Length: 102
Image (cartoon, rainbow, N blue to C red; front, side, top):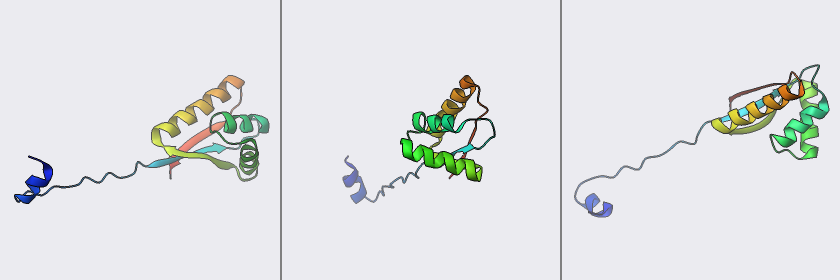
């Protein structure tokens, strides 16, 4: 039987509403050792910021202590954070990156 036929025979159809997946902010923290140029590089290569946007965000991180590199679904946020930390480790920088729910 088609769904609309069953509905006419006293059965009710329930629509399942799916909630939007929770989103996570990936945060980059300021430190006294990671170069500004490297932070800009990470923002461009991992988080896909334009050169101008990456520079502005790097300066914000430098002045305030942290900045939001991007907001993503959980799995993407984890992957981007791990990529940024791996790049920093390979380059010998102590860059700190974390994530939190939006």
